[in-house]
Amino acid sequence: MLSPGADLALSLLGGFRILVDAAITELEHRGFADVRPVHDFAMRAIAAGGDSASELGRRLSISKQSAARTIAVLEERGYVERIPDPADARRKRLQVTALGNEVMRTGEKIFEGLRENWARTLGQTEFERFERDLRTLVGAQPVRFDTPGWMARDREPGSPGRSS
Image (cartoon, rainbow, N blue to C red; front, top):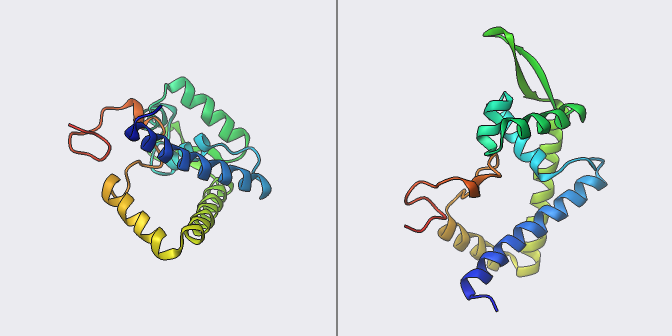
């Protein structure tokens, strides 16, 4: 039998998993059957300045080789492209394409719909209280979108999610 603390952690993880699985299924229905959560993390990291395999690897807490494989998949599917670096003609920078941006926007809309479904299930007032309480416990944005490897990193003392 799990302790109440472990059960809470697994319940929160379960909620995350339910939302992500539902979003992936809906993306498939909308014509994006080849998108996985890691692709969204990677595209958001690229859009935020992770414009090389090395930088993407650092931002995602993965090896440069894993980042290069992810980039290759995203390029093949038309979600990112390499463009000339205006500051260095020898270098190519990564950029999210219009299709990649469409996937990210579509995913955001899907998550909004899933949130609305949860609000209907609990009732709007109760759901708003739940969200407010959750933000009180974990902070306004406990995990950045571009860091799926957040569990592998040391967190700053006093930051959400770390007990000192």
